[in-house]
Image (cartoon, rainbow, N blue to C red; front, side, top):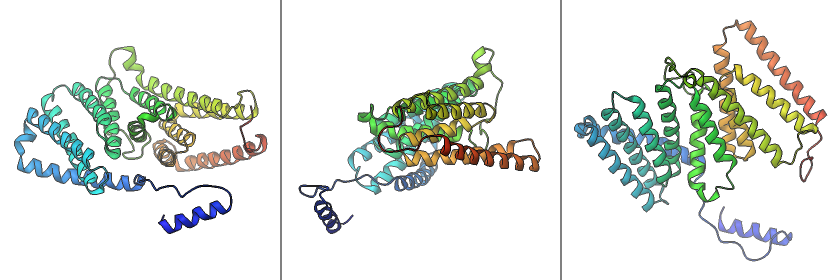
Length: 359
């Protein structure tokens, strides 16, 4: 918004009696989210070129575990210096992002070289390193990617230990804890928001079928203990419990009593969603992201949630062992049920007016 336009707009607001006083000074705003996404993509491309240069020119660094770890730590430190020194420059932000991603890759290469026979320890160490980088690095996109890498490292660590499927519930709990406590943690907003986006993307990856359709890490036999054998059900149950808790928290925030029409409708829909999610892998994650996105009025989360829902529907449709005719009738029935449900909600629930919801 240009200065003359701001002055004209401020004068119109003053004439209407909506504001008073002098025109407020402009503040430097942060880049839009789509600019940050493009910076992240450019950073990945730049990091691959930089990593290729290091691999060709310093091959011994890639082959020696200690050298790779030391180089990765030094490169990550250099990225930290770049981020702190030139935070306002898009060019240096992009360059620092590329340098930081190379540092991450070098650290992971060093871990795999050093503990190649113990992948469980490699992924656990990678989780600790990526979580530490999420807290330390003063860059939004870097923190999103680092938190995403931390969540996936935790998933692979548990998976390599024979605990398959539990990580999704743990990640969902962390995702809700960050976004639903946003006001209380406002002083940690620079860390929590990008970490929240990273956890959302990890949920999008986990089982919603967006990027790869299925796990890129093929299932293994479960461990001998009870937790390992029941981890998939425990992870799914934890996601659905978190989903139910989110709904109850939202009803409390909106001052909607559980016994009135709105409360009964919300709980009924929640029960139906939980019942459907038990037989439909990925539905719980998708609904959780979408509901939290609406709860915090975050368009990016809403978009991720809608993408997760679309990915779940497409993946679940192709995984169904049914004929195309049966699948068509299922889609028709689902669409008709949603339309009927919308009509029932509009006719049964009271209209939304200004002020608080019904108590």
